[in-house]
Length: 314
Image 1 (tube, rainbow, N blue to C red):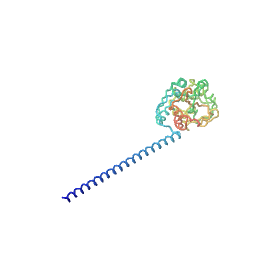
Image 2: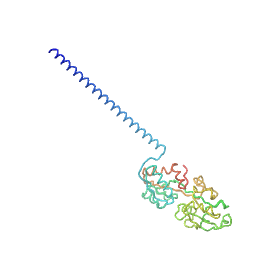
Image 3: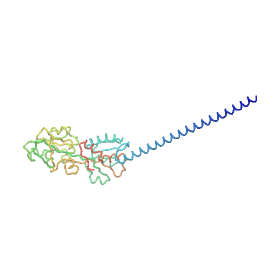
Image 4: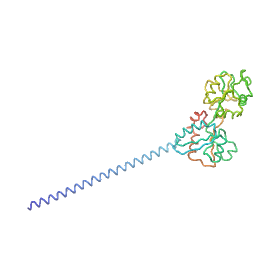
């Protein structure tokens, strides 16, 4: 009996020790799992912090390199119809680069200058420089491109140079025979663009013959003008410099060759500036300022050339 009692006590003690051991094991396991979880959380936090710092660094580097950032928002522009092709390219390209929508209202240079003066748009557009009285009201003109227009003749034509005045006389019908300007005896065939063409408006404005030109042919594309001149020994025409090829001869004007360099320097006469106008009395939005800075940068040069214009000097 006494032996059975001793065995019962021993068994109870053994069970107690086993229970304590089991509890100790659970505690150790829980502590281990907790430590692993905390370690994982810490690593995750460190990783997120590292990623955040990396993104911030990349953003800073992108800004420093002059790349366009995704800003969103919109910019309203108003003015020159001659800048329509350039602005169409800008709208598409800059929207993809920045996420910013560029609105363009082709109302004419004078209307665009009035609109920015009155605060009805962010940026006015003009295919001419600002007049002194306009600048005096607090407007600033930013030249973003140059519209360089080549005067072209057939390669068989011996005439190599004309003055701006002679070009005007040929286009207004005051001079009708090439012999009057040093060429062969032959009736001048005057070729140009259709009414409403920006190139035509620019050409007529520069040679002071707006609405006074007498055309034999008014064609709907620059390519058609070049082809017509190339096929007629007595023809004269005009085209954006970037479109001219070796099927025609480009004249010097006042002894100055038509080239990107002479247009940028201002030495070549048949040209005009494309200008973005801002109002110093009004603070530009961040989106408008970013767009203007991009348009003034070398990053925009390829799109200026795509529009048939000459980039500004940087």
